Length: 136
Image (cartoon, rainbow, N blue to C red):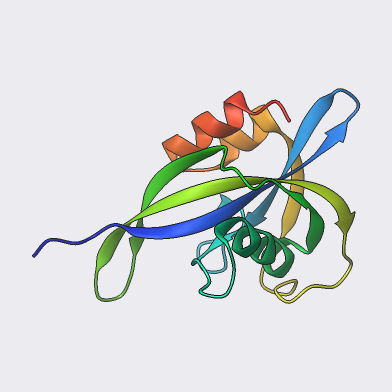
């Protein structure tokens, strides 16, 4: 049986620290791996707006979201019943507000990293490449 690729949207949350961009990573809920905030497209929002919403829910941030994607990566979502390929489209979100309370605060950790360090912490090769090349 052919398994079709499913789409997700993500926000690469970043800020300036001196002249270096820092990237905000969050832990996944189940495996506690470092990831960027991501989720399913939303019927009532454009993809960049859905990515901004995911950043609020998962990382507790607000800011300026780019309307154009800065890249894509793929990974395999492992489920109880099946594994399916996911293609994630990433939108840059320059963080202007870090909230002290947000919907998934009790389920995730968040931490700022220089982009090169963030690249070393994520598992997906495509995301590693995007983070290594990110310049803000």
